[in-house]
Image (cartoon, rainbow, N blue to C red; front, top):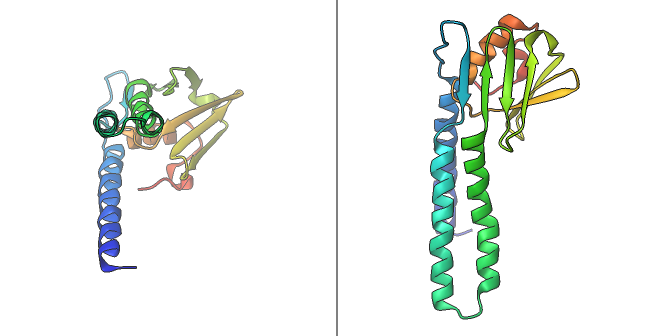
Length: 175
């Protein structure tokens, strides 16, 4: 491996670490609850920024390819499939995924627009999957999936500790 490659991969790794740390910091922020004890969690705004940048990059790359190559429609298609798909996926997480809760129940709207709710007393199992980045709450045949980059997630975990027998220390959640 040449020193230039090593430097490039080191810079990329450092940037990924910085972005990941920045986004995780938002989930550790305390959320101010409403007077009735309810709260609303939304995804970090970084998802919106990266989603729009991915779509813009795809558009610019597609125009550049089509201006320089005559028969490059397949390349443009795969460009839209990969980068455009990633942009749409991130924007769906930002605009659709939200979690509302109070002292009685929790309601999750998924990035696909589906909505599920559970009362705190109905939750039978709680787990965190580091690979997917999802906190899963199971009960009554339902699975609520909460993304780890929700702003104020630590406040929700504090409410979960008060309302259920589960503690956030047993989740192996990144602190």
